[in-house]
Amino acid sequence: MKDELQEALTQCLASGDTAHIDTAERLLKKTEAQVDPTDTMTWGWFVVAVNNNRPDVAQLLIQKGLLVSAINNETEMKTPLHVAADAGDDKTVAYLVKNGADVNAEAAKKKTALHFSANEGHLNVVQILADLGATVEAKDSKGRTAADIAKHRGHLQITRLLNPSHDPEQIPGGLFDAAPAADLSTTPPLTEEKKHRK
Image 1 (cartoon, rainbow, N blue to C red):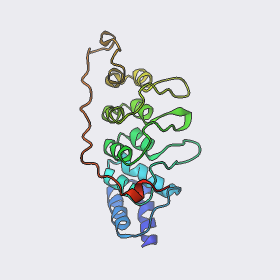
Image 2 (image 1 turned 90 degrees about the vertical axis):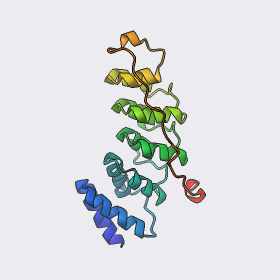
Image 3 (image 1 turned 135 degrees about the vertical axis):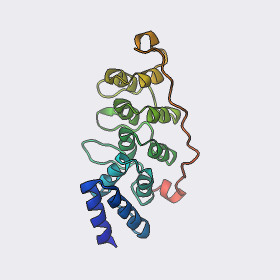
Image 4 (image 1 turned 90 degrees about the horizontal axis):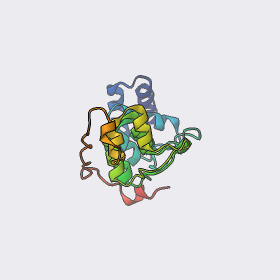
């Protein structure tokens, strides 16, 4: 089973093909083994999952041992929350925070999940993070808030959402609607054993 899973994961990472993701998911569900949170294969699969809009697979990896506080490497210092926010995977973002991820954890250059999602223009993720307690005023190593980054990148709805005092007359097109409130009721909690694992 382990060799079969390893092969499926390798194929999944090499191609990003949905069929390989499905195969790896089926095998992972069958095995009793936990994933290694420090293994680049585990992280690679998590990235493939969130980039292919597969929150079910991302959540399965967390349930199988990818800790919500794990760090991908010493250079980027990203947690699963940073990766999911950067990819715009709102369901995984909500799941991670509800299961103990630090919404204000800093990656390299003091970037938070809010910085990553604002940079990429993921309005719904920004809304979820703000609703779940992200510090809107948090600054990266260059002294920029998420709103500053969103404005620089032209994500004006996010700028308006994070900085309501921003003059709408200065935003082309006038006022923007904020993202709808996040529905977090469908995100299942982890067991206590998984939640407190270190």
